[in-house]
Image 1: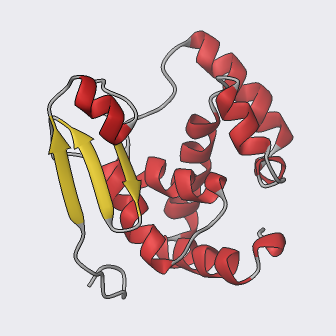
Image 2: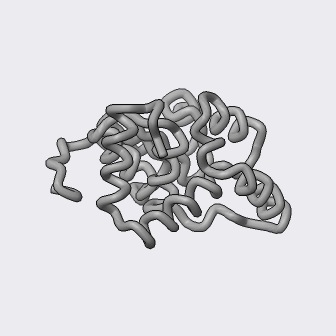
Length: 152
């Protein structure tokens, strides 16, 4: 049991880097991975805490990508802010606030434009975990599943 939820077994597939990896996982860099439902597909290593968080969160239910990535980045990833340019972009996003990220399509659009939305979601969720605790995060997940348009 994790955080009060019985977790079903998951499948973990590991592939060497190469052409087959691109077909199976969609990318081939060292450490690349994808998590969907109860399956993690990974390149060369079994250490993917970020993807494990996705798998376990998905067993509670599907949520907005800002919440999904925020939780996975806060718990299962190293710091996402890498350089000064990244910091400047991050601050532009932060000025708009997390509610802006919850608008339909914004998180994905900014991510595809190369904006550091994963870094922003990581900071927001690390702050919430530290100040409000994991119980708040679990309640947020439940609320987001039951009432996606009322996420606060």
